[in-house]
Length: 171
Image (cartoon, rainbow, N blue to C red; front, side):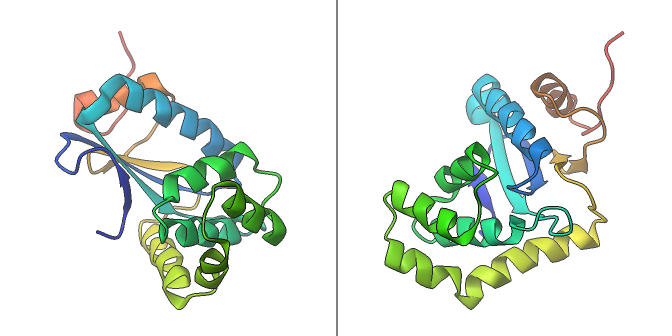
C-alpha cells in the first residue's frame, strides 16, 4: 500500500487528508484528526497524502520529501507531528536536525532525501491532488466522498457517521 495510514485497514470509517506540513490550517486540522481518532478508535482509518502548496509555502515540498525519507525508517507520523509542531523551521538544516531528534539513522535519512523514490512518492500524491482539482489544503475525503464544510472534530465525526461525506447542520 502506498498510503500513510493509521488505524486498521478494515476500519468501517475512513478519512483521507490532502495536506501541507507548512500550512497553518493543516496544523489546525491535525488537532481535529487527533480528536476524531480518540473518539472513534479502531473504527477509523486515517490516510495522509501530500499536497504541498509551494506557491505559498516555500519549504512545503522539502518537508513532504523529508517525511517520506522518515517513512523509509518507519517514522512517517512521528516526523509529520514534528513538522507540524514547528512549522517555521523547515529549512534543510532543520529537517536533518529533526531526523536526529527522532533518533533516525541520519546518514540513511540524508541519502533517502535525494532518492528518486522519495521524489516520485510526493509527485504521485501531487498528481492525484491535481486530478481531483485540489487547490487548497486541507482537503478531506470522508468515506470516499469529498468533504465540504467545517473540518473540526465534531463535523468530521458527524460526516463519518452519516456515511455520505457531507456536512449537515443539526436542526
